[in-house]
Image (cartoon, rainbow, N blue to C red; front, side, top):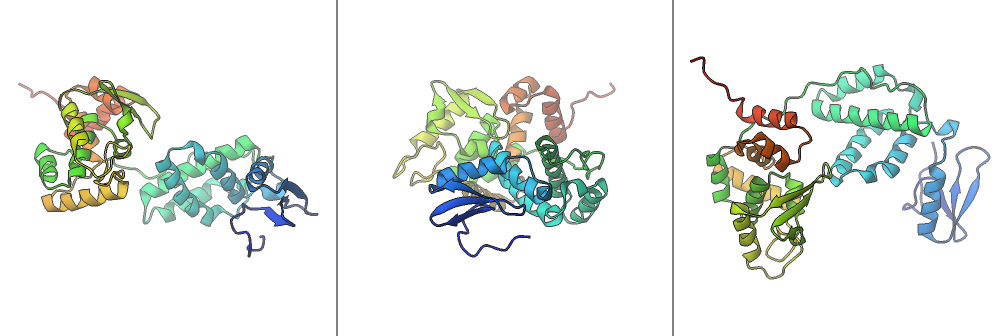
Length: 325
């Protein structure tokens, strides 16, 4: 294990500065110092190219593979997924970091799940999924040819949310909500979008008589017709007096966009005052259930399959059946 840096703490692993120049220092003996130049940005680019080369025998630990995964794969994911993966990686590295990638077996994965599952079964499942993806990448990159140790290791059973937000509960929160929260709730319900997608809507996304949305999670493009109640809500939001006008549709009085923290804080306060327990994300499921048309709900929510939408709706309000007579 290398010594902890005392200077140049901002440099990536195995990059050093000497005599005003940057170098990549290899891990095998004798150490190979590869010149990277004097420009830091160019040096980082060359460092990334070297780090992407096939791993040496002594560099096949999980920590090494995880570092490359963070550099090459994480940037391709959505901001929320990146944030979750970074937290999950810290837990995985704490256990598997120093282990050679070939040494991780299904028994290790099972033990990890059992211990982690004592306090967080859902997070344990997510971390196992990330471990599996990293291992598959390790196989593609040539770090190992062994089978994925996560294959065949069963995770914990999860039960999805089954809360349906009634009209009375929705109105109760809406009545005591901050004006920006009222706008967010109405926009979320009428468009059926996730909280993050609602918050990121820009005024420029209003093009003619449609609201254009690109979903963070799936990258799916939607054009939602601006008509009926949605048109009235958008007009109300735009007409609100503000000291400054920002780019976002949902914004505070000073023109700054409503942040996820502000949305959650205001929603928690209104929910407590109203005496209800649903979460903001449950509004999306209410939208899917209230259309009365599964085909419409599927398109509005951006689901790939009708089965996904059917499960989404039935888990909240139940399947409609007729009596015997």
